[in-house]
Image: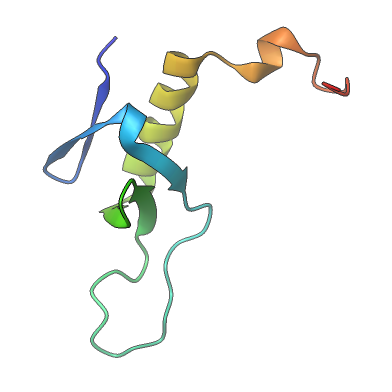
Length: 80
């Protein structure tokens, strides 16, 4: 498995990802170029913008890389 995921034209290292937006960007500005894209926040306040398919691929790769937490604890069990 690769530690990189392709987003737009960038090979993003999985370990740099801080969070991934669940909803597409909408700011209402007429000249916004990011509407409908999902933000993938990286370290040091950097971001890349992904289409839905790219966002889903990034989530899947991170889960595969880190392991699915659902494997360790049942979905309806409290981990604490």
